Image 1 (cartoon, rainbow, N blue to C red):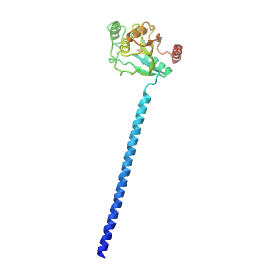
Image 2 (cartoon, helix red, strand yellow):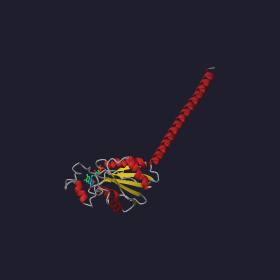
Image 3 (spheres, rainbow, N blue to C red):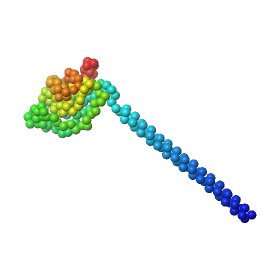
Image 4 (cartoon, helix red, strand yellow):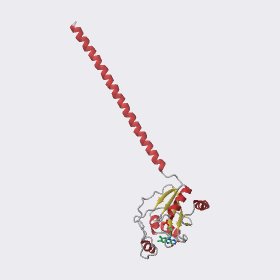
Length: 217
Ligand SMILES: Cc1cc2nc3c(=O)[nH]c(=O)nc-3n(C[C@H](O)[C@H](O)[C@H](O)COP(=O)(O)O)c2cc1C
């Protein structure tokens, strides 16, 4: 009888162990499934990121407004053009900021007097280069300095290839017209389809800018 009880205990113990083993296996299998799900989630996050990156790429025939401005007048016009044309905007930031002394046109020894007296001067640009891919039109704006474009504008146009892009110069000034600035930029760029430029006074209203843009089409 004792022997029979021992055999029964051994069988019961074995059955219990098998059951425990199955439970552990199922847990493992659930864990694996969780891991797979979390891997799938990560993958779909990656796909979303790629799609977001693709969404931010510039669409064909997009418009870009490039500008340089020290006292804000050209910046204001650039932002109005960008608003009317739904354009992206890129600021040319000089590596060495222009101080009040630098832009003192009463001083023959000021930095701008030196730069404007030297057609070969090419002040360095600090802003990251802009990719022109996807842009078919670029408005390019600057203040008039001594009747011409600031030399940093020449630094900019000499750094890019504008093939296939319509280039539209604009400027702000106290009273001078755009003069030869557009032509200078075109010659120094050596690429792009350059239109006649346009001068604006400081604070020109957006409606006037819109009429000018509509007249271009
Ligand atoms: C160094 C310097 C030279 C300038 N030369 C002229 C000029 O020849 N003719 C003119 O009408 N305005 C001239 N201006 C005035 C600027 O063209 C005008 O204030 C412009 O709107 C400034 O643009 P910003 O505010 O975008 O820098 C000159 C300004 C500076 C600082």
